[in-house]
Length: 448
Ligand code: SF4
Ligand code: SF4
Image (tube, rainbow, N blue to C red):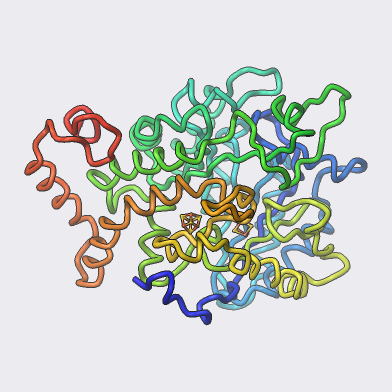
């Protein structure tokens, strides 16, 4: 592994391919998740329909296929809630994409959904078209229902489970997107076991909830993003050095990841794929699969329902609007100097603490949206999640290096599970658990 200091500047290059997250129904949603500041983005488009027209759909598909050099192109729908567009929209979209693809181009259709609209008709379509479905679940009922509420303020767990059952009935490939927030941050292993055992998930990604606010906006932000005292919703922007009570704490995020990692590394290597663990292992080979932990970013853009293109889904706000694909070709917007600068800034704005950090080659300072804290030496612009990120990367590095070594020897990384078992047996059941949570192994990650 290259040490942080030895990372060559030539490694700091923006991604050649790009990924576009498309919001066909804008930020409109049929749920009212309390932490979802994306709901506030409706304020950007106060008039007119928040539904993608067929004209914009045609422009998007055509320009995406023309401008993407990769042999496999992902067509990624998200929101808001994309299923609000109705099934016929997606039937038209898939047919259009299949008819427009270049010779040799393969298409991967994905959709990120809260799952509550998924029924047999939807799932038959998703299965027939080989969609990869991302389903949002935050853990077992009481953890999921802490913030993922219906518009009537009730928990959405049962509705989501109905959608999950429909996916399973039709054999649709799915992964779980689970946010890490104030309610579930202390329950990493429990959340993970629920996703693995009850939902039979084989692909899982964890997303930290960090809702920023200023002293002026905090009180409004704490109420959630759909309602406001005046019937108008404030537009969420990535500003302010405060966070809402729903946000994950930095240390809590680290504990959550370590908790999940200790379970995974004993039982599930090669069987369950946790995005951040894959990303970390790949980083040891110099490959960066996720913008958040890559040296530079700028290759993950967002497309609004009306054709507006933004630098990133987390920066759908006026200052980061690159243009509209009805006026400027997507290729030009993606390759524009503005977007290149946006991506390079991820590296150029690293704090001194990040530049000298021993896990920088794995972390790369995290996402710029979370860089609003002070570093240990007082420098501003440091990652709010740093304590947690550092705890996780430092904790996981020895095992990750072992797995990387196994891969280099062309041996399966799953071999590490036997090594962990032997180590646990040598230590004995009453030794402190290796998660460093303070409990004995037998009552912690040693428990079957
Ligand atoms: S701002 Fe964050 S989420 Fe957006 S592309 Fe950069 S690293 Fe990725
Ligand atoms: S955010 Fe923290 S853990 Fe990540 S590179 Fe910077 S100092 Fe290291």
